[in-house]
Image (cartoon, rainbow, N blue to C red):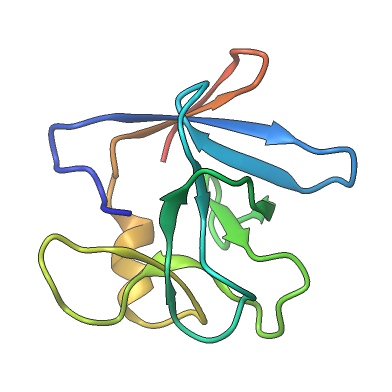
Length: 122
């Protein structure tokens, strides 16, 4: 899964499950944000056909969110893939210093709830 360029936008649907976790999918009918296998160490995050559940909590600063694999030790959160490559990729990983750049940069991602409410740019 790649970050959008500075001028691009991506729309994602975030839907709460009955267990209190969330699924994230591209648009309202696209693939789901996920990873292969069990959450363990550094793993690329991909768009996959099967749904994967996530924990979403308030982030470290006002107006930010933390997205983590439920039940992971650590926790393992969405952040930058640690390899410095272009275009930058998203990974499931412990928090690294490089993630600070991801949090502070406006990504052009529009979070939209399943009811259609806009949660704002991230």
